Length: 151
Image (cartoon, rainbow, N blue to C red):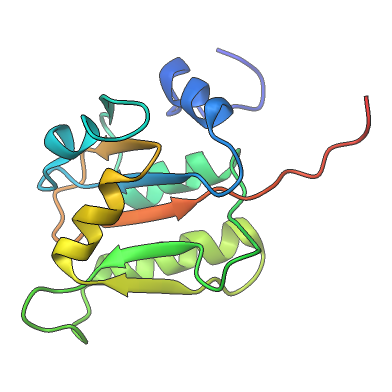
């Protein structure tokens, strides 16, 4: 373990977050998402499991290290409810609270139709699957810039 890093973040997750650059996408999903199939098509090329975590807890841990992109209108995307694009499930509000708290501002979350979400997920840098049972626990987080002092 290291100081200041949430214990839910494995060495592999920290490694992936360090490999990602500004504008890269990270999918965090529930156990129902076809994560293994889609992860094979991502930049990282394999699935990362975050066992023992629900999505809001996992996302909060990730966002304790990774900023969201401020150069796009919606740095987070989520899957729409199939057959009801305006439908709402509890995970949507829970994630909204997590991303708003992590960023200290209101963050726009863009809804995507199921297959559009899958297509976007295939272009992501990596996929992290939590133990969350869902439903509709599928989110894409776009990495932002960390303002660092000069070396």
